[in-house]
Image (cartoon, rainbow, N blue to C red; front, side, top):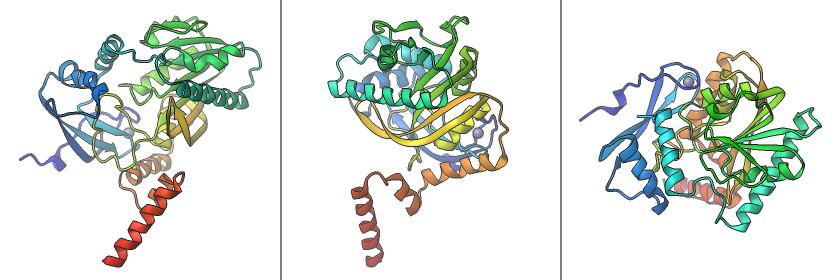
Length: 331
Ligand SMILES: [Zn+2]
């Protein structure tokens, strides 16, 4: 039998470019197994037919010892991801907000207003802005921006863009270089990309002098010792510090980086919000080390980390505490 602990990974880290990895765990995928839901049939097809052409496959999870980034091997390439989105755009209305509940639409609108208010605190621009939502589905998140007179654009594989929003193409290379933006929103995108650093570097060419990039990324590393049940939807897993490093390695100065409870469509979740502008800020060994330790603490949480994780859910916290006390008493 193969000793998986000695399995080495020779890939370069997509954030820091180093090749030192700590093996964390693995998951076996089989074409005959059920995944979470019917929605995942399409993802299953992508995984076993488009990406791998195999009936079963093992995926290994590693942590970059230098910067704390998580890597699952085999990892889909940019081409694989392109094929994935083209396929999904055909088989389901990926990106569309049509058919989702009124409540979701309202929550998306409210979140967009919050983002706009947040950006206003950090930008000196007082005229109407050019705003791009990169990976912004049908452009629904830009509705409050449009109502306030800003010029709104979207880049996404989904083609039925809402009225008043201009669609510039599927992906970065489709955007004509004469377009410059005051704000680029990249919400729940960085966890889906083969080359997130390449995207952030590429976006710099489309920013005005005072332009800002705003991102939201879900926090999913808590106890994540093995690849996800669905290995197709998200392929990158971050924590607050590793996102900051991703921006710094891509030539940005991070001006806001915070973890928050927020909505994405009808789901409430922990996210990291980051706001950045172009700039070259030195990266220290200390912050790289801090990021690695943070990833490790999330994957193998101690009691204090568990407390932090669920501070928004006191009832769950109470249950965890009682369980611990009970367990200690019986031991
Ligand atoms: Zn790294």
